[in-house]
Length: 215
Image (cartoon, rainbow, N blue to C red; front, side, top):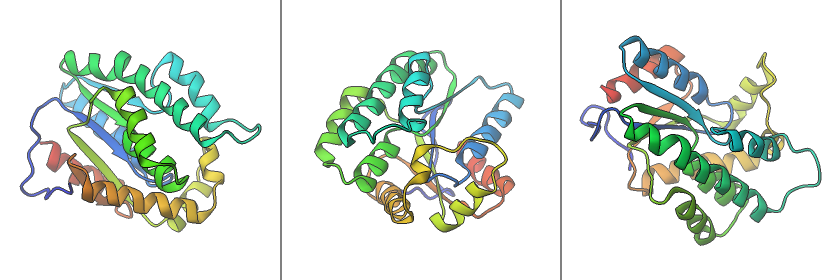
């Protein structure tokens, strides 16, 4: 459900907020800026990500994003993400919510729906079963989706000074176009609240628009 930022109000504060989008959209930068703002106001915030938000998850992340061996089967990839998420929900997200902290997460179930579903073409029922097993019904209060043309995103990736490249960035442009379309479909069709932002905006403007919704 795409929200109207002029009328939307979070149903709880602190909240569980997820940042989504294709690689190179700027979601990690926005996540960091939102966290810095909340902390400057004295609000407790937990910063996390998928995959890799737990000790187990860090090892799974290596298998998923740094693997350079024989290509994994699509089912194996899906189940590795599910294992990472199950541990993440149990060890980070739910405890964070219970402690009264903002939980800010770089990627969540919507990346699985789009990367494995739209990107890989996996059966949606199989994906939904894996998501339900991993999350046990845990969903965010808000998803901030940064939308951008993959061609522009690839130019951004090429200009990075860090070495944060992952294996999904080796996929063809058509793969990332399918993912972009998948994210927009999620925003339109799922009951979760989505704030869809134009990722071509400056980091400062993206932060301002996000903070208007977070209150």
